[in-house]
Length: 270
Image (cartoon, rainbow, N blue to C red; front, side, top):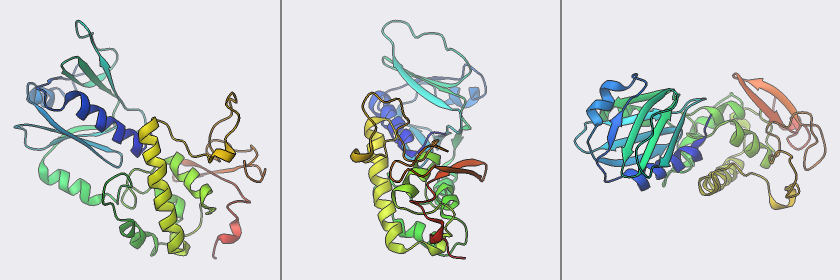
């Protein structure tokens, strides 16, 4: 599933290529046809990301289009020189402006939300590390009172908005935190360090378009085909720091990875 940095890059692309233009809007697949027709010819005014959610605004339209890509969704943009190409595959929503064409395929959600519905959505979300002014103490109030594992809390979008499976695994490793540590047993200073690190990692992801979590000293050789992560999808391989085989489990239906030594189980408080 795309993580928060992907949605921020997407919002930036929409603003840079389509904002201020009257766009053509359609739903080749048909599942968004009525709303797409309503938007057709209106000026696209805004695009912003909140965690894993994209909100797109149009002049003269009450509300915003809410997109959640889910596990398989993509929203791809390309430049066209002459004629707009025919859509390929199941395109839920197509937006065309100037020389740009954006095709949304396979999203979990694509809907027009009224202002009060947008407000309700944002009220449910936890602080998003990539949003200016996001307050880590809001998340901490939930974490510090919870018996739930920190690994589960990090994936709960009502606690922190935008974290997915990769950032979760890598962030916990970088701070030596066992994934099954109850939230209430996580020291406050460790949470603040994790938050600052998460913001920096996600900002790097926005710049590069990739999740990059390795410190320079731990990078494999430039020509190495080895996965460039500390523990994510490295079950059974040696930890980059201590050599211990990376452990794996399934938590809440998602794969979980950690180093049993660097993220010592002794940190768990029974």
